Image (cartoon, rainbow, N blue to C red; front, side):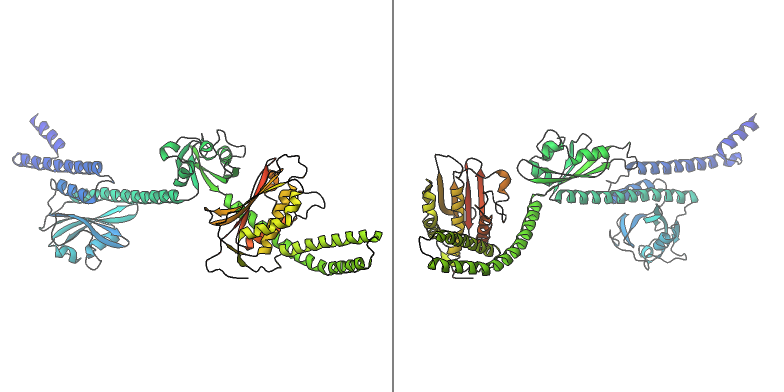
Length: 559
């Protein structure tokens, strides 16, 4: 029985010795097992404590304090690679020689670089084959250098060193490499987190900096995120805009329009584009892009959308202006050619008819026919003159002049025609307005055109109050002189307002207009550095305002 008991104890404890040394060997075995348990606890505690928010030097201090329970050593250090160079990141305890961030070049730290190149742990000894000036300078006798290896890459080196000559068994070395592996995982996670954070900051900076509207919505079209431009457009804060419907914020509508790009994207899971005219007159372009929280599973993933919204109003205006400019250029060339071709035969016709009128008796029946020919010839001459002006073939000689004087001269030419039609003219001239640099005859032509148009606005109407107002002044906001001609006539239909300055466009009857008056007038005013504004309401009247820049102090004559 005692023999069997002894054999059982030997099998359980692994101790095979005489009774005299039995307790001593058992004690050593228990000490070894306790040491291994401590090592496992250290690894477990390190894995629990390590996080991307924990500073690296704090981790090294904690590791150093834990290692003191299971190993003999004097120094712990951690070096990391950055752009192909090895830097001493942190160490414990301080030694007065090293500094955090110092570089360890290959010719100085040969043992360290040897481990990084071979990715294998090395027990370095001062009298060994590999000479290392960095470790020798610190007075190190023995150092266990473990690579921080993860994902087929060496992130750095973990070094446990001693100024004495302790011995480390294979289990100790395995433990230190496992410890280094944990640190490698920490460095890898920290690097990945830094990349994600940097990418997130870059994306957020770009998201906020884009001047056009960017909105992220869910499947219910509720806003999940909006950039700064979208917040400024809506006048809402970030907290207020989140959760609201996209069409409610952007389009001020409770329901999406039939051509809504967002609706198409959420339905078809494809990119869509649409355009919408807002109540304030702006034209917005919508580009909707589908997105999935699980890109690999489009059918099952959580679908949402990114909407890019661009104000296309100015672009469309510019496009219309370019088209109009091209059309005007083509018409100008054609008008110049036609005018020059007509001038010669027209001069002959007028010259001959004047000769015939001189020789024809006053009461001759043919005199009336000749007068009609002369009248029509003079009308054709005016049309040709308008074509030449439209094609910019004439030169403008500018002088410093008074706008009020130009208005008075224009009224002298047409006031009789207007007043004979029972139309009252109300004149309000500001005596304090500054002078302008311009051509008086050309500006008179503009005002005569506008006054005659105002007179014709009463044709076909039976208004009791037939009034044409002429007013001059200074527009403080624009810093320009204005001449305002208004009437209480029939007004201009909305569909014609955008076309009234187009060449040859007229709403008058046959033979009552060439469609060049307003186009030529606009060209003259633009040549003076100004513009013409128009406001009109059907059945209430119209107002045309000529804006002209004041003359400079030193302005003289210029061509």
